[in-house]
Amino acid sequence: MGELDLNVHQPTRLRILMILSGVDSADFNFLLNTLGLTKGNLSSHMGRLEEAEYVEVTKSFSGKVPNTAYSLTRRGRSSLDEYWRAIDDIRHGADRSER
Amino acid sequence: MNPDSRDAQSEADADLRDIPKWARRYAQNRTLAVVAALVIFALGSCVFGGLSLLTAWAYVVDKRVLAGASMLVLCGFAVWWLWFSFVGGVRIMRSISARLYRGEGSASVGLPLGPGAMSHPPTLIGFVFMFCVLASVGLGLLGFLPTRYMQPISALYVVPFLCYLGLKMRRIGSPFMFLWPGLYVIHAVLLVAGVPIGMGPMLDMFVPTVGYGLVATLSGHVYSRIALRRLRRLAATPESSDGG
Image (cartoon, rainbow over all chains, first blue to last red; front, side, top):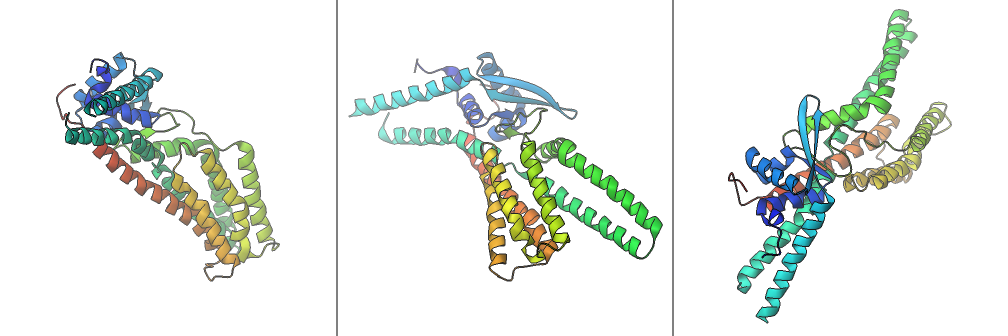
């Protein structure tokens, strides 16, 4: 488990990164509704991902309404790919030891 | 790890790995803005047609003031229509889209969420398309084209244009948009084959243009609901309100 990136392995953050890996950009409201989190909870996860430079934040206004959009950075994408590779390795290792 | 729990874990992983696919499908099929554009186009066509008829009628019955006034309104509307089609429409559609999807937030593929221009079809293609529209309408009005074949003739430029748009925007657009040229062709072929589906020259143009467009965009919208429901199920997180 030491090989796994805990910024990615945490279940909610993993889901956030997976959503962002499928689209070019998603806003705070979309992530909030899709994941069914509270605003504070989502903010704290996004803060962690932003700190790790896994997501990029774009703040804008839609009319007078502020909008915060997130997109996956190159670093975030490669960390996600590495994470799944590590998971697959662990799984295959477990399969081999079982046989 | 026993085999049962490993199978369950693999299944959970497979669900997680499906999240990007459904997120993308949802984002590609957010077609309500196009539905709104088609409705605006339909209403605009009705206003345009109504004003033209009113102007012609007023002129024929010698109501010069009414004819002049409706002609003025018609010109003003035509100017607004051009502005909407080439300048302000994208901004208006973007704002309508933001309102329609306010409840569920926004996810996009290919387009920035913030202010920015949605890519128009290249100007040359747009002009060629408009030239074909005006030429066929003009030839039809002058009696060079039989009105019952106006729709099949229009299919010769409408279908390639719609296919071009669909292919050009395939990364960001809904695959259901290909239903539109598909249905347009079928309608044209049936008319040429003499199948009695003709509704008169006006409706034969209006139904394939707006009606099939609505069928395609609403199909995309329905699919986006399915994709969103699936995405929410897959992305449901084990935590509810505790921090990470």
